[in-house]
Image (cartoon, rainbow, N blue to C red; front, side):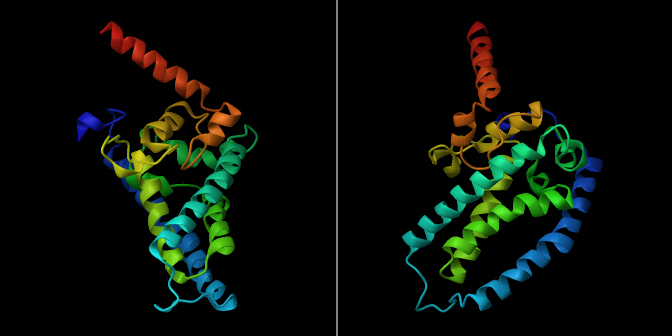
Length: 214
C-alpha cells in the first residue's frame, strides 16, 4: 500500500492512540446523543420504516446525492469559518494535529466542531428523508466518504474517484499539509468557485513539472 500513499509519513502509535481516545469521547458523548435524537425525529414526523413504503433504489441514491450536496455546502462555509484566524486555535486546530491523515482521524475533532460540522449531515435528512432506510444509507455513504478522504491513500480504481467533482484523498491531504484551502468535504465546486483551491492546483502543476524533469 505504500506505493499509493500520498504522504510517506505514517502516524506514530502514540498519535493513533491519542486519536482513538478523542474519537471514543466524541462518539459516545456527542454523536450518540445526536443519533438517538433521530428516533424522536422519525416518530415526530412519522417517518415510515416498513418494507412496503421503502423507496426504490434509485430514489434512495438520488436522495443520498441530495444530502451530500447539502452537507458539502454546509461543510465548505462552516469549515472555512473555523479556519478564521480569530477562532481557529480554539476549535479546529485540534483536527489539524495530524498532518498526515489516516482513516480514524476523519472524526478526530473538538466536540464543538463535531456539533457544528455534524449539523450539515442532519440538514439533508430533515429536508429529504421519506423513509428510515435513507438515514441508514446516508450514514453509510458519509462514513465511507469521510474515511476515504482522510485515509492518506490514493487508489485509482476506488469507485468514489469516478464520481464527477469528487474531492478525494489527494484534495483533502493537501488541506492538512497546507492548512488552508480545499475546504469542501465531498465536491470540488465550491473551492473552484471561490478560488480556495488555487494553491492546490499550483502545487500539482509544480509536481508535474518536476516529474517531467526527472
